[in-house]
Amino acid sequence: MTTKPVIVYGASGYTGRLICEYLREYNVPFIAAGRSKDKLTEALERHVAGVETADFDIHEVEHSLDSLTELFSGASVVLNTVGPFSKWGPVVVEAALASGVHYTDTTGEQDWLITCDEQYGADFAAKGLLLSPGLAQMYTTGEIAAQICLETPGLDTLDIAVFWGGSPTIASTQTILVNAATSRAHYLEQNRYVEFDPAQGLVPLVVPGQHELAQSLPWGGTSHPVWFKRDPRVANVKAQGGVFNAALMNGVPQIVAGALEATKDMNEADRDAALEQTAAQVMNTMPPRENARINKSLDSVHASGPLGRAHCVIHGNQNYKQTGLLQAFAAQWLIQQPPLRTGFASGCQAFGHRELLGQLRAFGLVADPVLTVQA
Ligand SMILES: NC(=O)c1ccc[n+]([C@@H]2O[C@H](COP(=O)([O-])OP(=O)(O)OC[C@H]3O[C@@H](n4cnc5c(N)ncnc54)[C@H](OP(=O)(O)O)[C@@H]3O)[C@@H](O)[C@H]2O)c1
Image 1 (tube, rainbow, N blue to C red):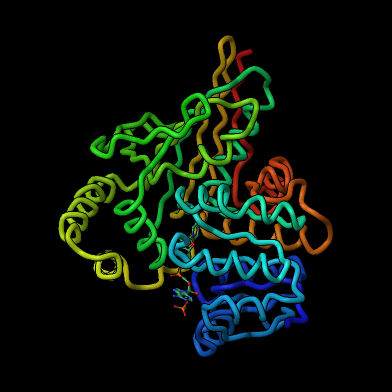
Image 2: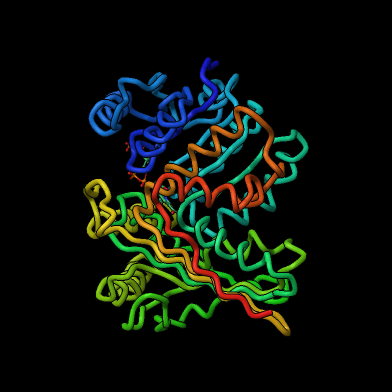
């Protein structure tokens, strides 16, 4: 049983450290939890700026339902960064439910969102708890842009682009590869999931702010179709995205196709191990701390309806910092008051898109949205 209100699970990772950094800035006491006390201590002491003035404890914990339930009991919220979430997430969600704490994570995996929505959402709602997977730059910043468009009534279709610049972390690379190779990507058409054609390949996109066409992929389908599936205003959602680095984008379909071919006859455990190995060949070191001049984000949403259109663009920087901040703000909120919605909910549904935008703006991580409306 813990005496601090917030647990950061996976605090030794790149994103976990940034969450701790922002929890300190919000003055929120927390437990930095993970599978290795040594790694947690090193991560907190060497990589969390100002940690000597934070109110926190370190807790090594086994990745099991019993151990996590015991750790979470007495807390208000767990912020989970241990991905790929379709693989490691269920036990953490079940422990949050058993111990009666709100749950958020940093996933961008569409299949994990669908699992949370369809399998666990009602149980969280019944207990008055929030289940908010995917509170992260990908795709909350784009969701904020979509919600700003939807402030104009009468729009029902969202066409979304999301791009970022910089290096993915070890777990992000694993997540991107495992997710691309093992799960289907969906868009929303008249409120039903429709599968992207797996053979679709790269699609060149016109994106705001540059002359060169960007190369895009469905990127696993993204979280947006799941978040908007039960939004009465919205019927159609399609998202495409990737990294600004076109050479890297050109290589992604080949890497995924090669990994699929090499693992097609393997059982699940061998396949996962082989995919992790391929991911490690792409990225096996902790990327450097982000730099606003290098690590950029772009979220662009065209919303349309029978007689109206809106376009919102959010230029931002330091995607992982945006994620750390969003998670820390959620904790700051949830230890003081209930979310706007319980059960399965996106960041914007739980905390309000204008509020989340305000936090990102206040910490210098996104520019003022550029909005064009014709209605
Ligand atoms: N949607 C977004 O915008 C966004 C943004 C940031 C992150 N993410 C996602 O969040 C996840 C974490 O990213 P990251 O950047 O923090 O990666 P990372 O630096 O590689 O950190 C991964 C963390 O998970 C822990 N972990 C890994 N396997 C574990 C296991 N089997 N049991 C217990 N703990 C385990 C690691 O612990 P050790 O230190 O002990 O290895 C570490 O704390 C990834 O899935 C990534 O895709 C998404």
